[in-house]
Length: 174
Image 1 (tube, rainbow, N blue to C red):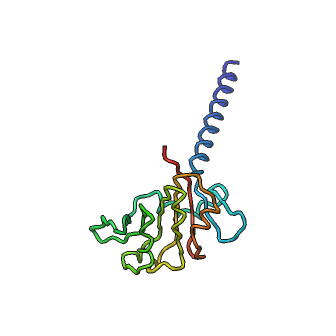
Image 2 (cartoon, one colour; image 1 turned 45 degrees about the horizontal axis):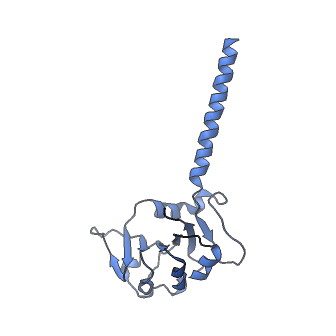
Image 3 (cartoon, helix red, strand yellow; image 1 turned 45 degrees about the vertical axis):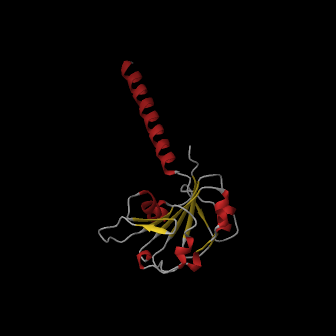
C-alpha cells in the first residue's frame, strides 16, 4: 500500500514539474514583438502565431551581440576597430534620419535598423524605406516604443518596402 501512495505522490510531483516548466517555456517564447504587414487588415502577429524559423534571423540580430553602429546627433559612433562587417544600426535620436538617404558604404552590410521612439511626438519624423540609400542587405526594421503605441501609428510612421520586415515592441521604462 505504501508503494502505491509513493508512486502516486511521485506521479503528481512529476506532472506538476512538467506543467510548470512547459508553462515557463511558453512564457519565455512570447516576448511581445509584433510584425507589421503592408496590408490594411489587422495583422498583429506574435511569436506564438508564427513558426519560430520565420523569425530566427530577426531574433538573432536583435537579442545577440553583433557589431553595431550607433547614430546620435547626426554622428555615427563606431566601435568596429577590426573591420568586421556591421549588421546593426541603432538610432538614439530621430533627428538623424537624413543619414539614411545619403549613401554610406559602411551601411552596405546592415541587416537590422533599430529605432527607439521616446515620445508620441517622435511619430512626426517619418521613415520612408523605399528612399534608403546603400542598404543592400537590409532585412528588418525594429521599432521600440517607450510609451503605449498602436499598430496604426507605426504604419503611419513607416512607409513600407515589401522586401523589409517591420517589427515593433512596446517597452515602457520603469
